[in-house]
Length: 199
Image (cartoon, rainbow, N blue to C red):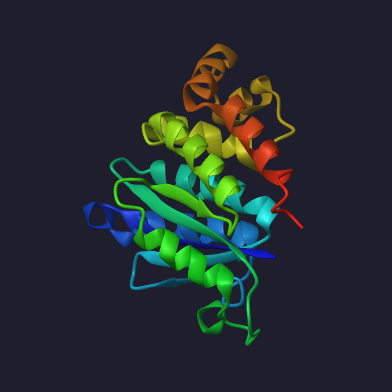
């Protein structure tokens, strides 16, 4: 079982691609290698292949990296399943994970993040959680996103260490992390990892 994330940058034309492209590449590199695990195409669209356990974390991390830039956001769909073929290029692979990711992406409409696991109950539960979470996630400011990004990059950091890294007070970081839903995100990621869909 593998996870395929299909995504695109929302409002990409409001910024020069040079502003955000390196951040996106860096985020994708955190979870795989180009071109076997990820590829950017059509200028602002991408696909990433990663483990099921890491796939939702990857979505939050990519979102944080992109929302550092004002007015930008990212739309993503996670498809979980098997893949066929291993040509060394993600764009040449096939299988149910790709199909589910593509179908899920096409059905996003106003949502910016959804999952298709192949299991009706797991999919419905996760997407309900993500819809509720989006009330917070989709409102991150660039400061919120930068703070969360550091937190996800360094899960062992205390709030004091995050504050030192960003040259801010611990109380400011505490407030910002609370606003981003950081603790709730970590709980959701833990739940996601332990779902039966994980191999």
